[in-house]
Every structure is written in C-alpha cells, then in structure tokens.
Picture 1 (cartoon, rainbow, N blue to C red):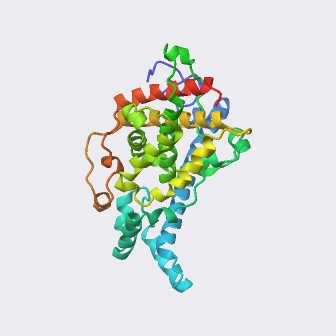
Picture 2 (cartoon, helix red, strand yellow; picture 1 turned 90 degrees about the horizontal axis):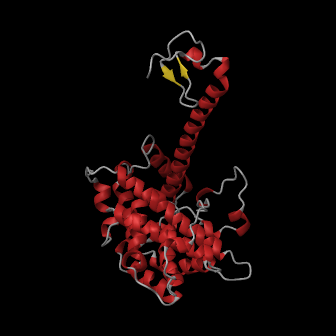
Picture 3 (cartoon, helix red, strand yellow; picture 1 turned 60 degrees about the horizontal axis):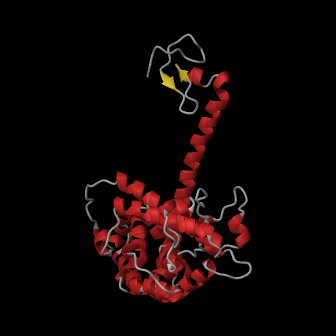
Amino acid sequence: MNTDVNCKFCTGNQSRYVCPKCGAPYCSLICYKSSIHLECSEQFYKECIQEELDVQDSDDVGKKEMMDILKRVYGENEDSESDSDDEEFTDINERLNGIDLNDAEQVWSSLTDSEKAEFEHLVKSGDISKILPQFTPWWCLPIEKQIVTEVGENINNSELPNLITNIPKLSLLSKKSPSDCIQWNLVNMITPYVFLIRYYNGKHKSYLSEFINGLYNLSKNLCLNQNFESYDMAVKSVELCIQEHEMFKGFQEGFNLINNDLETIFSNGLDSNCNYNIKIALSDIHNLLTMYKNDQKTVSLKKTEQGEFNRKFPDAKATYSILVDVKKVRLLLKKIEYFLAWVDESKL
C-alpha cells in the first residue's frame, strides 16, 4: 500500500487501506463509513451478509437432503412402531450434529455397524438410487420454462445450464465439410452426458472429476474418435460401455429412462425444441469441461490418506481405463466447439 496517498474522505490523513468495492483509499473505519462513502460501504456489507446467508442456506439444504436420505434408509420401517422410528431418526440426527455432511469419512464414522452394513447392501444391490430425492433434469422441464425463467424463480437442481452464445462459424473452425456421421457421433456424446446426470442424481458438479472421466470413457467418439452410422448404434455403444463397469451395476435397468430422455432432447416433432436442447447440452458439457480444467490446475499432488469409507467405496474415476488430463480437456473443448458450430448452422 502506498502511504503517500491521502485518505479520499478526510483528505488530512495518509491512507492505510483500499475499499474492496470501489478502490478508494481511506485511513480508518470512520472514514470508510462516512456519508460520502455510505452507498458503497452499505452495499459491501449487504453483499457480505448475503454471501453468508447463501452459504448457510446451501448448508441447510444439503443437511436437509442428507437427513432425508438417512431417514429413508434407517428411519422408515413399515413393520416398526412410529415412535421407535422417530427415536431412531432422532438418534442419527444427534450423532450427525456438527458433522460436515460433505465429509464422507466423518459421516461414515458416525454410523453404527448395522447402519454401515445396510448402506453397503444398498450400494451393492443398486437399491441406493431408490432412496435418493427425486430429481428432474433440465430437459424434462416444460419448454416455456426452459426458455424463459422468471427472475428469482427457483427451479432447484433442474436449473438450466448457461447457453454459449458466441458460437464461431463452422467454416472458421475447419475447411473440410463435416462427416455424414457427425449427427450420430453427437448422439454418442450426449448419451453418456444424460446417463451420468441421472446416475449422480443432478449432483454431478460435486463429482466433477468422476463425471468428466465417465463422459470420456463411455463415449467411444470422445475417447477413440469412433464414428457411428446410426442413432441406435451410437446409443447401444454407450449402453455396452456402461455394462462393462461394476460401479454402474443396479443402474443399468434404468437405461429405458435414458432412452426417454434422449427422445425428449432429440425430438423432431412440429413443436420441437431439438436444436435448442442440443445446444444447451453441448454448452453444459463445455462449461463442465472448463470447470474441470480449472480444478485440475489447482489440485494438489499430495495424496490424501484413505479412510474406511474411501477404501470401501473407492473413487469412481479409478475404474476407468483412460483418465482425462488437462491436455485432453483442451482437445475435448475444441471438439465441443466444433459440434456447437455445426448444430448452430444445422436445422435439426
């Protein structure tokens, strides 16, 4: 800080600080809160309070979701008395009080042996998906709600991804004409995107590394540049890849739901929102890849010690044959941009 600069508000003292919002130099809290600077300082305090409230709200929502899930697993038993259920749920609630619910090891260590055994059974049998809160993906929203969302309207986990609008001309990206199979290659890319969003029940941003590595390995077009000659072949390829992974056991039966999702996105009816849907999906993939790339740059190389939970339920990305590094992400981003340019100029 340059102490030769005088306070902007009293003008008599040398400045010691700089306003984080407007950059004005000031010497003390009194000057910072002076009437000349009141509008800026009040706005700063409001934003700080709002950020804290947002964090608290987010924590409260996360805690409520976790408690709802735990109640479904351990607190609901049709053959038990309701009083007993309430006592059991209260016991879990008390044990988890003050626990960081985003820390799987802490939550796991707070469970009893019988609760751990029941959770393991649910995971291994695939029944864990049945107790998760109901999730509605963005492509299942009414079209009018997708396109126009009222200011302040909360659509929870179905929040529409940000659409990329500065799409370059296809001719600027490549002088060669697109292959005839580009549309089916596009299907092969969006199918695992839809599947993984369903698999992570809309919480895929919290599992970004697993999501990106899954997307890459489940799409043969992304990882091997394989071309497809039909819609069915493009979708079937993803389904076969899913069946090869033990981590997706129990969720494979839900592939009928994925087929319905794909029909919604790629619908070609008179009221079709197809072109818009595909651009939203590609934009979301591009945004998630960008987030992943930024995360990879800051991730620590230090290995974290594995606790009991991580040993029992290892990191999903470790089961993939090919892991996505920053170099691959850059190539994938260019590929997504090419698909976006093609969709933008096509009448689908």
